[in-house]
Length: 566
Image 1 (cartoon, rainbow, N blue to C red):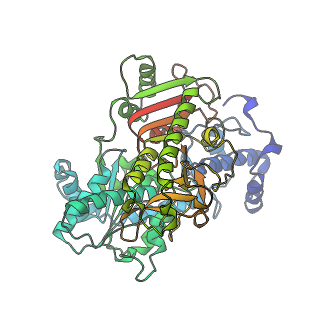
Image 2: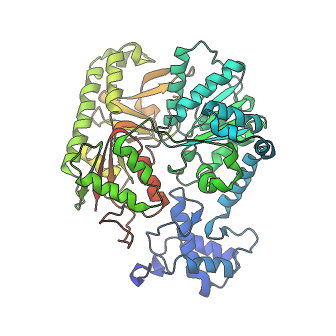
Image 3: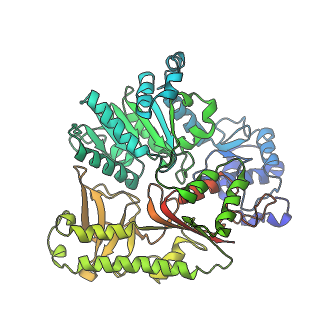
């Protein structure tokens, strides 16, 4: 930043109340350092909203106004010279060129030490590590568990992590059938995927899975003190497997570690390139920030081969984090100019109006859902009986609805603003938030945004509106207490935290996949044209933007369409 036009007026500083508390408690030269500290406070708050809690000042793009345009050198100098770092209980910590709130730095340090205690590094290091490189992944994990109560399984989307997890459980139970094994994930959507894979394995095997249970992390914690209410309790587990760890907040991991026994083995599974949890700190992303120079490398298994997607989808996802950024942009230009068949299309736009062909696809998608839900809602008896599982009555119709529901993902960087979820909703719903779910047309996709343990619905679960007026219901796919997949009709008054899911934010799409994915990419970060932008494009400038785009692209299994607003 080198323009005074980019500086904020002091009277417009929106975090003045936080700064006032800061200056009341801590003494420093306000005339010299006040504006710089205001900048630091804003940077920490704005990035925390996105889940970026440990800020490498040299690797982030500041896309908002600051008082001082000499970011970050003057700001680091301020922390070093003002005495803030040496204050007792200082709320800000800087470690070289990294800054964070002390609450996150303290938690990271504490949880990291707890995890490191599970690794007997001397025992691992003393063994012939050449064996590790030659072993298949299941043998490798078993080998590491011999010397460590912690294994990290790292791999991108579609690298077979879930399949490996289930096969690993199978191999454990073949050797020792009385193991108590818990599976989990931070979201209901991700947990459901594990349950499906587990159920599929159950159908194919005669191994006893009675001592295997799968719940969301919140549910495990919530039920930890419920005697007789859960098949297994966290404190009784011999092995705990947590999937989608990039979405796992440090707060919830801290709760889990407080409950499980010291002897419980933990397998943490995830992708360090995906988005961290919003408004919280990600232990997973921070562990892998410098994995090659840490003890954690001894207990890390990495999956590289991608099975989910191929072609240009796979090539783009791999190039996003390549050190040479120009390779990604060269691939973008190649896709745009190429006349060869590709599973990726890129449509460049310079108008804020939603592209007509996108609108047509959205309308067609929802119309298809309306048609299929109407076929089911015309069966009036389904609203009059107390039916627990619709698949036992109208299997073909129910499966057809959810096949259509999952056939396409429309992803936006944000909920509001240009080319947002709100914009997509306006095409179909034609009314402003808050929406009346009692009057909306049936066939509209919906998403639950809070956990409801009584109904078995989790934050992030997606269903569809069905019926009208007195017969209005929410149709959800969920699991019963026996972990069996069921399709339930839920009365609206029982589930209040619902939003339209015609489109999703990229954050909310984590844990999902679809044959066809549409991404609206609009340079939402207000990035100025930089000297290192390539051929007119500026998809990303920092790691957060890379993770956002990477997460969106890797939801696609077969086809990806990117609409880029220049």
